[in-house]
Length: 225
Ligand code: ADP
Ligand code: 5GP
Image (cartoon, rainbow, N blue to C red):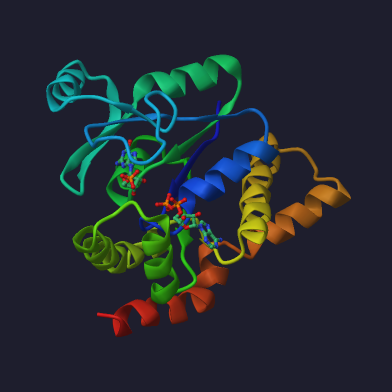
């Protein structure tokens, strides 16, 4: 059985950047390329970051039962095609889904063993800076994303692991530790000394251990309203 990893984060937290870095350092991991009705942004390519389809095409896929889950995010459809899970299972790889809070909840119902990871920005100010610096959104969209972020962050306690994307290199190492630790646990074998260290690193990001770290971030979003 493949391990399904679900990564969610408020838009602009650096999730795509972090996931790209993860794929450079972890093998046997497939990325589930979602379908969306939103237009491509910046240098995005069809079939790489997303499959970009029309509303009619998306609705035909819903009718044909092709989605494991789908949701309406910021006024556009986004969905996870069932075929990615089948392909990962056939090739013996694990699968990573980059989906929003609603999608994560839907998958968790269908695949209770899915490992859920919530990525947080270090604070509201940094998120705002990253959204502006990315240079892809209008002022109105940035405002909406910041407001949505506050509501999304409130869902953090539904996730298994919480990671703060402060320094990219460190956050990549931490995400890698979580992925590898879950593989070790899933294998059921006795961990080596090195694997034991990985398990200890990953443990720090378990929800219960992360609550204290999350608190000031939540406060920064409340104060910025
Ligand atoms: P998301 O996928 O969460 O919407 P992106 O990966 O597009 O976010 O990142 C948003 C912006 O923040 C990008 O300009 C990216 O280069 C930058 N960024 C990502 N991670 C970090 C980090 N750890 N520190 C500073 N900037 C970052
Ligand atoms: P963006 O437009 O910034 O790429 O993504 C907006 C949001 O949609 C992000 O939170 C992203 O994780 C989410 N998303 C991307 N693909 C899917 C999907 O297949 N299903 C769901 N539910 N959300 C998705």
